[in-house]
Length: 174
Image 1: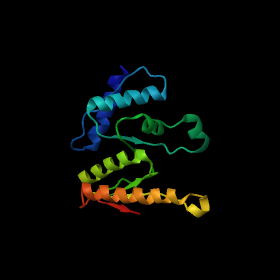
Image 2: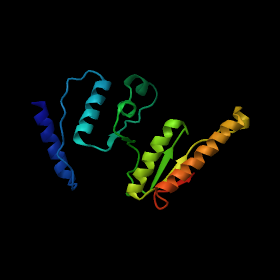
Image 3: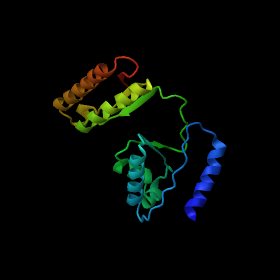
Image 4: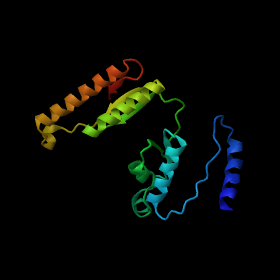
């Protein structure tokens, strides 16, 4: 049985890691034929298991390899109802999460996400760096009303951060 062989292989690898709190692996077996089906199976399992976060590695493919092979991680980000953290294989794992950078396009949908990021940061005792690229209104033909919208959004974000937690979960502008 392939599932049993997979469980044994995982158990062998996990025994070498010796991480306290590591749960026994779940070997999911589903008759899926597409990436979307595989992602939906994963998200369903994460929800049923009560996972608060899905962590997935990327292959960091570029160019034609990415175009033709697609991106499981990218599709997971688009489909998942559970927050997803992607990890590039060349990234170094932090020893502490003390500063989170929240990249935002300042659109309406970002407000709910920003609120969640602030709560996540508060739980970690981390600071939040708010990052947004503001295009030069003169260079790009942006109206002064559009620029005013950005200033208002940033001010509202600061106010939200102060209301939630004026201490270590505060937001700062980069």
